Image (cartoon, helix red, strand yellow):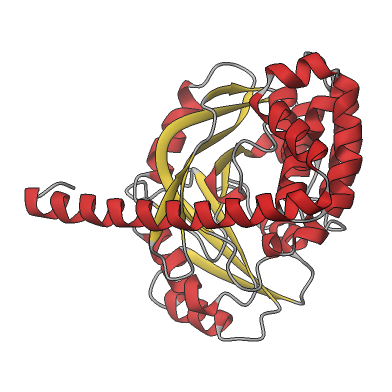
Amino acid sequence: MRNVDVLVTVITPAYNVGPWIGEAIDSVLAQTETRFEYIIVDDGSTDDTAEIIRGRAARDHRIRLIEVENGGSGAARNRALAESSAPFVAFLDGDDRWHPQFLKHMLETMHTAPPGVGVGYCHTRVMLESGQVVALRWQPAGRVDLDKQLVENNPPHNGSSLMIRRVCFDQVGGFDSSLPSAVDFEMWLRIATASNYPLMWGTRRYLLDMRLMRTGSISANRQRRFECLDKVIADYAPAMRRMHPGMAYLRPAVFAYRDGLDDFGDRWAMLARQAGTKALARDPWGRSLLAWNGAGRERRERLRAVREGTRNRAYKGMSGALRTAGRIGALRGDN
């Protein structure tokens, strides 16, 4: 029987996140919305992750630790879903952290969203392994349908920024545990195509800090992620209705070129070109794709080096600006 006082099940799949799991847990316990249960699934960690979780659980009854053999984030999430029944679900990765208003704001968002919205998400700040915020990530706000999910290449960007209606999982099933990467993207696309709540709704509030490419993270293995992304796009792009399915390959192709995986870039560029050169030329990402695709491998190497230097300088500048803003806020007494 469901506890009627619990509105949200918070789920954290945790694997070897000892340096960060305490901060993630503390950000959940600091939520201003307190009507939640918290299930953490230790996915066979070999470091001190489980020990840290047990220490926090001993001090707060809302935390429940489930320990399983390593099976991946999809299987860990499914195990937690099977143990829960709250009307809303929110996932927080063990190396990310929420703003104290996350649950409160996302519940308000879900209660005021238009009909058909099954998933809401907030905006994301990017931080380094140290926890230092270095950038704000652009994400579309408002209504997001299947076409936009694919063309924008997963607008929420990560699973820690979302709140989902429990009924969506009841209707479409659990995460695909056979996927070593892109498991969250596949689920959001499945909800968009197979549930009664096919829409996402994005809010402009920055309520999540996401660790960027920390050592050992799933997203750090770009080759594996692109292999999984290739399968997911091929499965769902044919269901697009407003735009040509080739547009789903635009951003992945650019990302592949940027990361030096030219084989993926070339193949995805070919599929994107099926949308027509005029359609690509009208889109900023399409123009970027045409430039990368036409540059040739040797010139791409130089472009990558220039881009990497520019990005590092931008992160350094943004980091300094945010630190300065924080000091000014502290002097003014801003919250």
